[in-house]
Length: 263
Image (cartoon, rainbow, N blue to C red; front, top):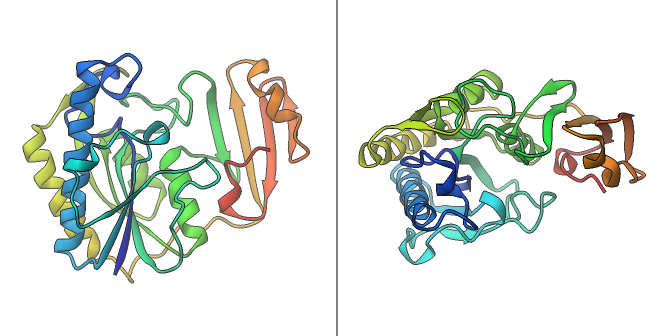
């Protein structure tokens, strides 16, 4: 029974400030954030194996990877990072029983959500799949659904968990903090949060073979609205893309594997 774990950093337990997820400016705060990330992943890996997993693959997915402290990570799992948005989960295929999304944040524009954004907090404003707003949790669920693999488990702040429960066929969720505005969060104690993550991951394993994947109806319409017109000038030059107005572009794709492939 194989499980794929896609990680992000904003929704990790113990992370409560923006500096903790930024390697270029976070300093000691970022280094502590890396430790928090590693421990949450370890809890999810342990829970997966507690629930009967035979293989676990972990994707160090925040900002291109290399945030996980690999030497401190659970040695039973395998580890990779995405090469690009098109290869969101490089080794995912039909052989997996489910995906876990650990450390999630809510989509751009969500109230009371810690560091809410979709891909870019400085340029992307609205992102829609077949006319409905989604964020990075939805992208992961759709990508996995292409292979017939369901989203089984989500951890993050309360807003991210609510988003997952509302839109993606009710996965098991564990909320490890509550946002106060956008850039501060009140956190459950990390030790308690990791106990909750481990138990939630174990519970999610009981859904393998029982929960349907989230499959987008094809062809899939992908629409992106950004903050300023120059932010889509380059993407709008692609033959795949139609420019709707100064700040909005759209493309139609045949597969959920292509929902981030703008060129």
